[in-house]
Length: 309
Image (cartoon, rainbow, N blue to C red):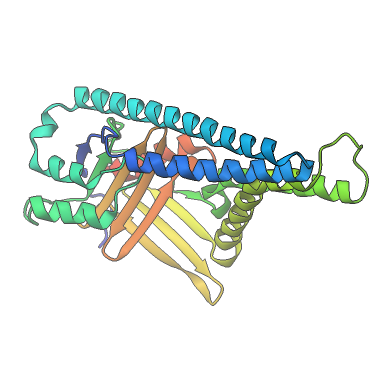
């Protein structure tokens, strides 16, 4: 349908407060165990490479367990405290929303403050508390995001985010892993001086960076070469264009701000994630991974909230 010259109805915006973090004890224990395992592996690698006595090795592993457990527990306590502070600040701006049954239903969906709610669960909560006659336009759900910009009838040229632009900050892991590989190669060739600590323990100690670099490389190859994905933002619509080797034309998933489109903003501390859903289509945009993330966030708000034709 041609909508030229027709000003759109702005989307319905629903604010949902963040959880207070009280449901994180189990996750905290899992994090402590994982951190202790990683720390022990690194400690074992270093001490085996150094040829130290067994008793010192055992004492060192125990010290690593204790230190890591204390650090992770302290960090978890600080994270929960920060979540509760964010919740109090949010409720100060939107105190009346807490009496809304729809907000209460959506609050039950967002149980873990560090995890993005599933769009299917959000739609189920919306259907439970409202009928089709209640909703006349697209909906924007703000989980933990207390403010939205005042956009109005804003016109702007369509903006496109390239495949590498969507995973820009992840490419840093490739740089770190590449630098470590180059360091090991130089040591193998005998170029490095003798005082540079390159040995088996050194290499095992940086396994995490090698794995992170390999994952970032895989994502970059997938999104940049095998299945290039572009994001196009224009007034009233966000489109995801996905190219494939076997097809010359891209698969286009469009999210126009009309009835049936659901945009979910999830604020996880300093990170903002946008989940777009319409029919069977769903896309997740993580702005913290993008290049010029603040400008991308601003443009996404403008695309979703602009009523310009």
